[in-house]
Length: 69
Image (cartoon, rainbow, N blue to C red; front, side, top):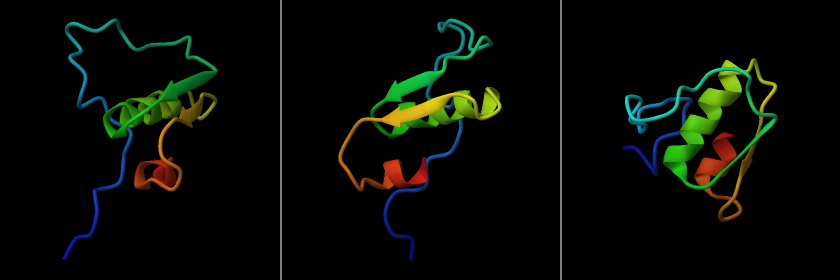
């Protein structure tokens, strides 16, 4: 039996890429995000930057989303 929500993973699933500006370098030094959906986009940016982008998650301490970043 699964417990809790699935882990947050690097993904752009929740973006409308046709209506969005392109996500390409130069990558930001920092991304500030809140919530599970946008956290996955922040992780995607971190991966695309080769790990150079830092991700700051604003939300409840100890939240499952914060533990996966």
